[in-house]
Image 1: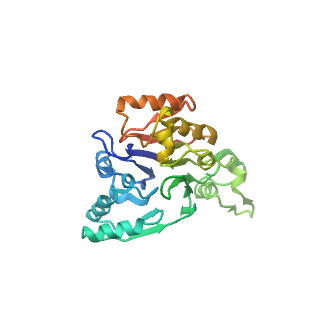
Image 2: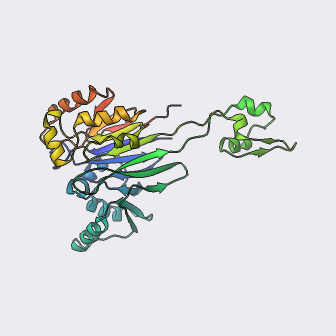
Length: 309
């Protein structure tokens, strides 16, 4: 079962010729979830050969232009691909106003349902039998939220020899047990899933954090992430700028990854435009001093998330 993150844009504040604005797309078994929609999001989606039609929901961190200016194009483009399913959009207040005003001023043709869910407090936003998407509060100049997509625990490994020892015939009944339901045999004996399965296995977790001051509670929200995509906008020498603009340094992002526990990989994102690509190594080196498994995200980079067991 595939779970992977595509970096559509890694820049902050303003687009550069080689760096689009912040946006990350997560694909789980063909279903797409978009986190922020910076300028030029459409370009990366096209170059990665991903389908706009498969975007189920969009989660916006906050109402700053470098995180939402790619949204109108996505909304208009979705009308050109015979979309029939509704598109869900989640985020803090004023998103509905922004979308409505843009639609009116551009006389935007929309032929599908857009369902907007604004929220002001951290909450469960998406509930699926296999996973959830939650928001948690950040500290920026406007109301801002991070997100986690977390799979629910999976059934344990199936042991065919245990099923055969209990006289469960090979075939559909094995699938029933693997799905978590009891099986009653012709003899009247009931076989439970725990009789033939190992202990539950963990799912996978993706976390997204951008545009926030550092504060230690973020670590609690992103613990156990297979991939944590977190802003590291500045180097430590520019800490005063980070605090003034309510952003984080790369070292602070790495501190969150280290303190969270169980984070497998940190991907830095939302770089200040003051850094040319070759200068981003400053951020990477500072982060790796704290959390060695750190990567610089780049536009159109892909991060697969694999099961541990």
